[in-house]
Amino acid sequence: MAVVGIATQPWQILATANKFLAVISGFGVFLAPATGIMLADYHIVRRRRLKLNDLYVGNDTSIYWFNDGFNWRAPMAFIAGMWPLIPGLIGTVNGYTSPSFTHWIRLYNLTFLVGLAIGCFIFWLLNYLFPVPGIGQDTPFLDETVSTTSDAPSAPEHQIKGRQGSVVKAISTSRSKGEP
Image (cartoon, rainbow, N blue to C red; front, side, top):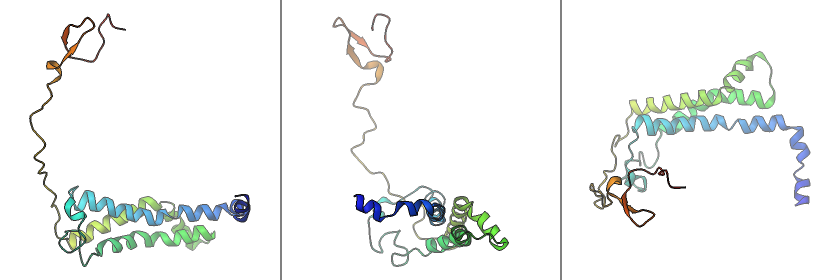
C-alpha cells in the first residue's frame, strides 16, 4: 500500500488542487440537466403516475419503449441544458480571465440552477409539442388480499392485563400515577 500511495503522488494532487476541484465541481454541468429531465418527466409530464408493469418490459408493448427503445426528447433536453455551461467549465478549469469568458464563468457559477431549469423546461416543452403515448396511464391497484375491515380491534377495544391481573381498557400509552 505504501508503494501505491507514493506512486499516486498525493503531493501533486495537493499542488494542483484548484484544477482538480474545478473538474470535480464540473460534474454539475452534466448532473443538473439530467436531474431536471427526471424531475420534469416524473412530476410534470407523467404527473407522478407510472405504469409499473411496463417499467420491466423491454419491447414495444411497453409505454416506455418510445422509438425502438430510445426517447429522443431526453438527449435533446440534456444537450440544451448542458451546452451553455461548457464554456464556463473550460474557462474555470484552464484559468481564463479574459473579459470574453467572464460572463460564461458567472453562468457556470450557477451551474446547477441553470442546468436544472433549462433541462426541465426543454424536456417538458418537447413532451408538450411531441407527446409520448401512454401519458397519465398507471397500474391499477388490484390486490384482493387487502381488506377494508380491520382484523385487529381498535385501540379502545383492545384489552391488556394490568399489574394485579385485572383487565383494563387501553386508551392511551401514558403512564398512570402509580406506575414507575
